[in-house]
Every structure is written in structure tokens, then in C-alpha cells.
Image (tube, rainbow, N blue to C red; front, side, top):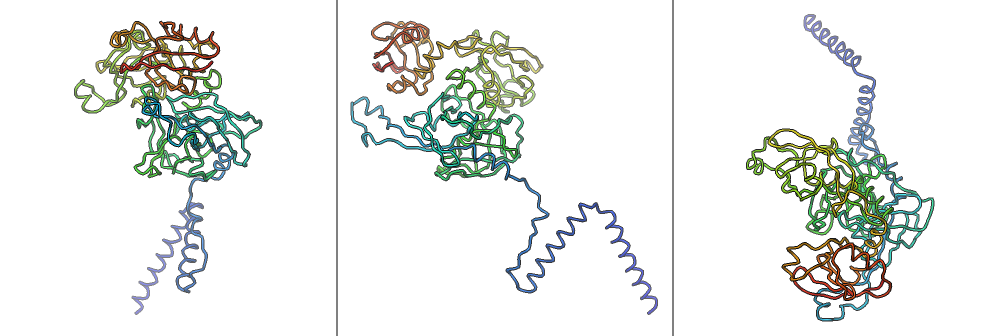
Length: 485
């Protein structure tokens, strides 16, 4: 009996010694966490044993998560509710046959969101929220309502800048979308389904997404993908980080139902800030181009072109006399970085170049024949110039709401015309209001032939009153349009 008792006592003493050593080795934080966990667990056990299911206990003390309170409070006061009214557009069928539009003059109403970016009333939103609006009402978080006017539109990025007449407004500071990391927490703030000041949270799921939603040749798509819930009415709202800094403008969702199903997309703020500054200063975007056509690299392309690594963006073509051509880049080269920023997708390349102006210089690292090379390019504008467009040219372009280019020789020959100016991009303005569509080639103004885009702008800049435009579409259909200046 004594033998067994001594063995039991020795084992007991060893257990006490082990527990003591374990306790000494624990850090103060670990001891605190263990105590909180034990306390919470004991409360739960007591509630179960006594049958007192109404007993309240808090086990959340040990759970550490992001605090969105400060960021949400800062953001909701700078996000506005936008309501628009527009006339219903007649269809091509109705125009052709001269039919009255269905529903008569019943206005179309829509709503969305916007972000105040300066204390004097400048607001960023999506182009698709306001582009056709004849009346724009903006309601602040404190329920004050204002009339807004459009300062500029950019369909290529689906961004628009509007303004209300007010001072000392709360606004959001610009963050840096390039510094966003996949997995980082973000908040989406907007007005879905007319539910004002709605805040949802999620993480950055991916970057530089191109989802082909804008449907334009000149479109720039490099979306931030998140799983923050976004629905109709969130368009134009804010995507912010946990510091409450603006990192994106919510623009789209991927859904088979028309409602949120787990994927939402925002325009990076580094693009949005440049677009907003250009629209504010010039009324349109001063966009820069490298002068190449590109595509992403996959295993099939790599095998065909004998590419060692699946990195960078493949140059599929080089425009004559463009920035890339003048810098010596060739078809088959692979761009891997721009000014030190890694490039692994077409969307990322477009996003980076969209932050520059014509005339800016960029350092390009590229691969040719599996060897690394570098070059400095001077970026050009759409017309091939390396300088910003002058104010007079911008003024008439802003009024017309269009980007104009000289029609190409092959196209002129195919259509049987000698000269013309093509509408390559259309925004809100005189031409769109008159019913002109993208692709239309202007051949005459008031029965006078027009030989170039510069000549057209010179003619219109001196005009007052009514203007009659004649031209032809790429399919050969001739058309006449009238509007006033």
C-alpha cells in the first residue's frame, strides 16, 4: 500500500511541477487570452448545466478583426445619392420610319451614387449614371439636395465628373490603388435600391480584371475585383480601404440575375484621379498611347513563339510612327514593366498608361528573343502628337462631345468618297443629341466639303445658329443631321 501511495504522490507532484513550468513559460498576452477563453467557456458550461439559455456571455473578446467604424463614418458623409431624368431615346427603327417613340415624352429616371472629391462640390461618378441625363439631382448624407451639372465625361473608363454649387463639403482623400493587396479589407459605400448610405465589407479578390463590359475599342478596363456586396444604385459609389481613403469607384457586378452574386468591380483610383483632374481642367481626358496592340501570354502562345516564361504582355502589332515604333519596339517583343511597375496582363498595362499624358516619358523593360532590354518612350496622343491639345481644340471637342479623326484612305475608297472626318468616340454633346452614332463620317458642313478634323473644328468654331451636317456610315448609309451652336 505504501509502495502504491508513494508512486501516486510522485506522479501528482510531477503534474504540479509541469503545470507550473507551463504557466511560467506563457507570455502575459497568452495568459490573458487563456483566462478570457476559460472564463467564457465556464459561462457557457454554467448556462448549459443550469438550463438558463437566456444567460448572456461574451466569447468575442478573443476574436480580433478589422475595425471598419472610423472608415465607414468618414465615407458615408462624402458619398452622395444621384437621381437623373432623361428623355427616352428613339430607336433606329423609329428614326428610319419617322415613328413617334413609344410612351411619348415620359422621362426615363435612374439613380446611382457619387463621391465628393473636393470641398467645393466636385463629384466623381460613373459615366453610365449621368451620360444621358437632362436633369441631375444630388442628395447628401444629411439630406440636403442640389442640382448638378456635368463637367466632363469619359466613356473609355466609364467615369464622369459633376459639380454642385456648395462649399465646405466633406470629401474623401485619394488613396493609392497600386498599393492595394489581394486579400486586403475594403468597404463599398453607395445607395443600392435607393437605400441611402449603405456600407458593405469585403476583400480585394483580384486586380487588373478586364471583363469586357464597356464594349469600346478605346475602353480601359483594369478593375479591382472584390467580394463586397454591390447592387444597382451602387454605381459611382466609393471603394475605400480601412483608413477611409478612396481606392476605387464602384462600377459593375458579374451576375446572371442582375443582382449581386459575389463579384463586384471598381475602377482604380489612380485612373479615376487622373481622369477627374483632366475633366476639371480641360473638359475631356488628355489620353496617352504607346501605339501597340497587345495580348496576354498563355502556354499556347508561349509554345508557338518559343517564349521561356509566362510573364509580361505580348506585342501583337506596332502602329507606324507611334511611340513604340519610334522607340524601336517590334511585334513579338514582350513588355514586362513600365516605370518599374510589373506588367503581367493587358489590363494592367492599360491601367498604368492611363495615368500619363501625351509627352510624358516612360521607361519600358521588355524581352526580345528571350533577352532583357529597356527603352524610354515619349507617349503620344490619339492624333500622334506628343503635346497636350490646345484649349480652343478642346473647347469645340467638348461642345461636340466627340473625338474626331481623318477618315482613312482605304475606307474613303470603299465608300466612294474623297474626304471625310470620322467620329471615333462619342460622349454627351451636340453630335450625340442630334442622333449621330460612332463611326459616322462627316463629309459636308452646310454643303461645304470638309477635308480634315482641323478644318471641321475651324468651321464650327466660327459658326453660330443652325448647322447641317452630311455624311455616311461605314455600311454605306448616308445621313443628314442638324443642330444649333
